[in-house]
Image (cartoon, rainbow over all chains, first blue to last red; front, top):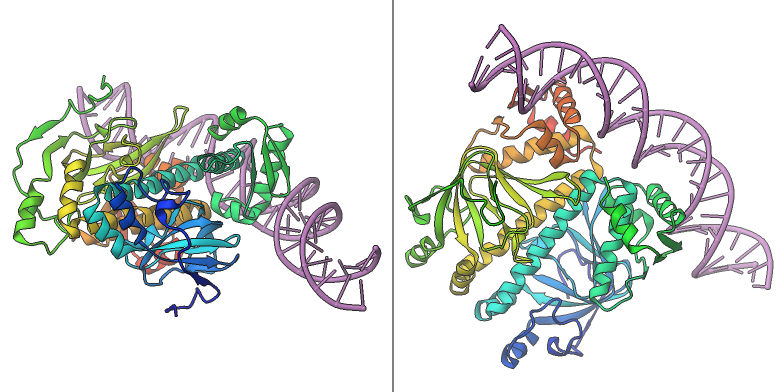
Length: 246
Length: 246
DNA sequence: CGTCGCGTTGAACCTCATCAAGACAGGTGG
DNA sequence: CCACCTGTCTTGATGAGGTTCAACGCGACG
């Protein structure tokens, strides 16, 4: 079935149950405002839909790059591993977002994508994407936009890591998650963290204890309420202020 | 003195003296292996060549995005400014590299590009790039590759900022510059830093004093020799080891 | 020659990492 | 149902790496 390192052997492949043209997440992974004809074409982009159980890797660094993956449901982290054993989270991805863009450069995936909860993704063959983008200008432009967005986001994280201190990092992390959830029609006041404190810390360049302490301090100040992985935002404005401090 | 869109009046516009097809840097900004016909087409990509005096901004955050800029000669930094006055360096760019990719996402430049020495850039109209990419698959793919490369690089910086300590950051910074200079046929043993200690620090999430101390320590250990902004690499291997530590 | 920007070095301080102990929830087995 | 275990999270005490503040060296330039 699936080659190389077999990181996918726990996954099931499904017959496409829904088409891109009918997908509620359209407009996130794909451009809006296409002709009916182009929409039909796009439906051919998806090779397969794949179920990924929690904890399983969708792709691993070094594997031959072939496809991008659009998340239908579930939540992922991507990690890079330094030469030694250490591993760092480079991103979190939710429904409607595209993973694997870093694989294009060297035709190998550069990071590892792991599901943090049972998930379902659409596999988009990169060759086909480029073929279609050749004919559909809006698709080509959309690809450029998506990649540019990732670059912008990465730069924001770099600023975070380079100059903000612990509480500000955590605050901005929460606000970023909320914003992305908001686009998907979720509450902008409550959220459930899909990842551990350690994974948050790895992403933010902090130790898990520091993340925990930061949550506690934000709670003490009345900006948020934390119960396990459930977080409620009490003062969005204040949180924004804090996130941009130092 | 430089207003909104007027960040360019300190610059001179030149009639194209050389074409892309004859440019020594071809293969960096543009794809290789095109037909003579396609090459001719590419020559039309460049709107103008612009001279940028040292210290001048090529574009600023918030300005309407229209073009990418390929560096012919010179050296740039890009910076982002947080809400308060603080400014952080998000990247350094040298001849043959492309700036402005972060502008595509929102049709506004997201960062500021400033020349660290007198420079000359080629202005590439984005609309035209997309038109040409529509007809030339290799160009389309090349664009994807370039953007993916930027993403990969940013992720590497994120790991650096998130988990390495000062000396390792500086070591990796030097090695990265050397590698990129190497591709351009420069010595892989010597380099001249085009930026201040403060700018290096800003990029690496360190204060200028820490950068200075790190240089001194690397020199003490005999890995490099530093004289002002001239750096000589004495033990590349050791430097690699140190760069991947912690 | 004096000034100015940049870089180096030292000393005190502070934030976050580290080490350690305990709390809490979920799951398993008796 | 309770006892127990495990993974995760919280909280405290201590220490290290980097920041901050300050003084000085150095080269470029007028």
